[in-house]
Image (cartoon, rainbow, N blue to C red; front, side, top):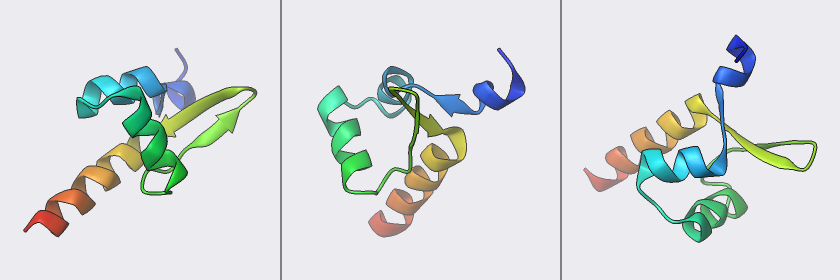
Length: 62
């Protein structure tokens, strides 16, 4: 795995990290609460986008 692709996660990897279901992850992407890019026909989520999402949710909960 190259450093560039190591920074991109698949939807199943995000599901595992956030302990969420597939539909919920796609809902977060659709609502733009979780940033993603399309590579060919595949959806990829930058690691930083997951960290930003978690940080934002923690701030909102406080």
